[in-house]
Image 1 (cartoon, rainbow, N blue to C red):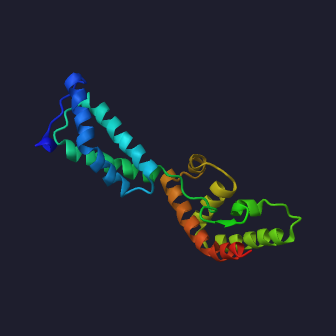
Image 2 (image 1 turned 90 degrees about the vertical axis):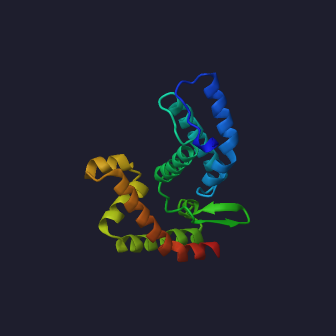
Image 3 (image 1 turned 90 degrees about the horizontal axis):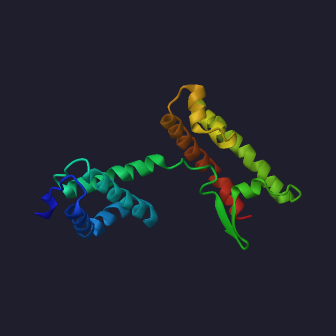
Amino acid sequence: MDEMLAIKPAMSGPSRKNISSLVSQFGKRLFGFIRRRVSNEADAEDILQDVWYQLTATIDAEPIEQVSSWLFTVARNKIIDSYRKKKPGLIEDGLIYENEEGEISLKEILLADTSNPERAYLRDLFWKVLQEALEELPEEQRDVFIWNELEDIPFKEISRRTGTQVNTLISRKRYAVLHLRKRLQTLHNDIINY
């Protein structure tokens, strides 16, 4: 069976042909597998390319006994890696609305000219609601959100200062962002109706 095909080390002419036949044989299935598990086609294509790259790198080092299983395992691992690498969402993600002039982000409203009384009011209201929502968070989540999002301190620096692992900090910020988005949704709806 083709799926049981073992690939031997050494990137000789026949191995190159093996890779071409594997791309032809598994390319569409593998892409479909990846695409169903990621948010967009570009990410799926990038992950598929990483799988093929790892195949070419591995072929020189060790034999692959069950190619199909190996390819789908590598694809699954690459998908998981891509989720881990994604930067946690910013507070303004999802807080964008569209008016006659196009999309306007919450940041644009917050940094807008204060001579416009309506925008000045919305900005003041946002900061009030944000402060109340921040007070509702556990201290660890609140601190990492403020340091990273408002003070623009990188996670590595926060980790160095606090002794907390970067992944833990990312997780805490994610929970903070989810809570704050939920609390700010009402304000967001008010801005949309502005």
